[in-house]
Image 1: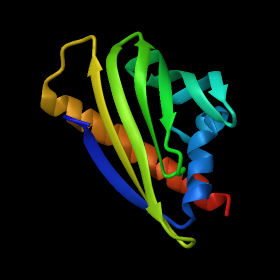
Image 2: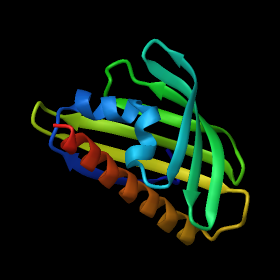
Image 3: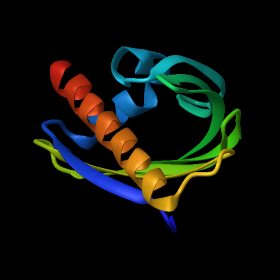
Length: 145
């Protein structure tokens, strides 16, 4: 993913348990800061394919829809923006590498807004979003252990 911001975190849980939390979209408002509501619009089997989010990050609020692609091995998921109010592009992914004891989760994100933003500020905002999401994911997975 060109021009993406990437960060990683290690979680004390096997990859399948981490991916189960990532795939549980209705629970996002419980642990993903700034996500206030989630609606799964379509799915295939037990995996969501199109999901609508409502986000409230103080001065930035958005309703947006993402399409998800799940790796057959259950170790990664990627998404692209279908539509958004303030976003004109969002590409992201979670990639999991781990064992029965722990998983390293790498989150990559690239966002373009409909409002002008200097590249350095955009990357800083992406970094804050990623770090907040990874810490929330870690808390959620490890508290369910």
